[in-house]
Length: 160
Image (cartoon, rainbow, N blue to C red; front, side):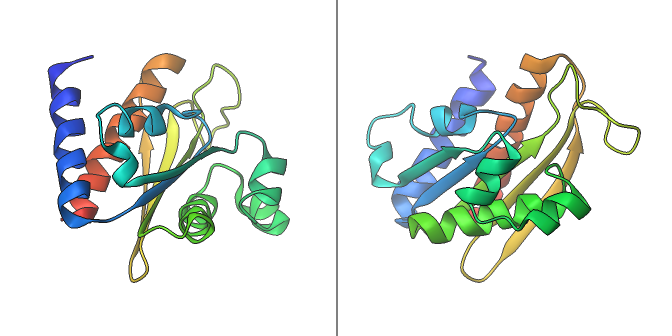
């Protein structure tokens, strides 16, 4: 694991422990990679409460309560879906923070408006919601790693 990621994991870990905040994740294209890095260090159980991989549209609807109309109109890979994933996993787990990632890691699934590497990362707290779109370059594995790293960076900033 690159040193930059190791340092970021430590920084987020210390911020979460120090702040006493708890976090839950809802992941699609990263399939639990963010949850995995958030739990690398000892004592992560102090803040990490729940990680859900809702890979299919059906699981997004049935587990996270994403309305079928949102997925139909906006898509599973959209700002609206990512925000609802973050908000709903936070509420489901009764945590301070919710983080979600949904995207197209490939090699299939890309469309002209949503090219390969399109990823939405959302964060939710009781008083604030945030979502940002990214288009990462590279292969499937690289896109998943980049999305997880960016989610960690955004989480760090969100806590601060």
